[in-house]
Amino acid sequence: MSTSWQAVWDLIISPFAEFAFMRRALVATLALAISAAPLGVFLTLRRMSLLGDALSHAVLPGVAVGFMLAGLSLPAMALGGVAAGLLVAAVAGVISRATTLKEDASLAAMYLLALAVGVTLISRQGSQLDLLHILFGSALGVDAPGLLLVAGVASVSVILLAALYRGLVLETIDPVFLAAAAGRSWNRGWVWQQVFLMLVVVNLVAGFQTLGTLMAVGLMMLPAVSARLWHDSLAAQLLNASAQAAVAGVAGLLLSYHLDTPSGPTIIGCAGVLYLASLLVSPGGWLPHILKRPHRVG
Image (cartoon, rainbow, N blue to C red):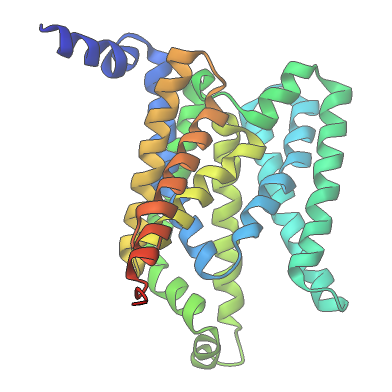
């Protein structure tokens, strides 16, 4: 094997070929890229980009309760996280309908309270290391049950997203038409939104072991926002977002392995680099915008 190929092998292939924990982390990250990034595209189209961040914080009390009851038990923490995320989203919706507050304002207040409660519960029950693990995750520490959870959530999410695709697109682009077509007997637009929010919460919970409750939303939103700079069509944005999330995941895992850095923040940092590059060179970015400006003739 030539020196150059040996260097490529040692840098890119060897970590995944030699270590099972790297392969598990790779599969989990790619599964999240396939399922979470397309949901981020829909969030941006619905002008609900901050909702993903709010829900990623909102799952923390449920994760904390699961941790207090069963320790670092993934099923218990995942179940608690799903319940807490859905509860916070529902309560925020009730507050917005019963008061003069908009849903984004009530959701912001709820997720801040949820974050404070979750951090307090984990700090009182566990160690500083437990708190850091739950908040920021450890992709390199994904075990077999964690991998099964992520793969299962990703598979179900992709299937449901494909089955609900036309309805979600219609509810996103023209909710008034969908409500009129559904009739008054059943507010179908509300049902689409609740199913969509459930998918978002479940994917955030699936990602918390790999990326942590604070970082999981990064793999959902950064590639999605970046994809909008490259394409106008929805299908292209969905594919681009998943591709960027996958590239960020692989690059982040390799950098984390070679540089001994935290895996979750490193993956999100790589997604951020791709986003900054898109801001510069994509069709909707800064350089093409500058080059298209008409030059004044003095």
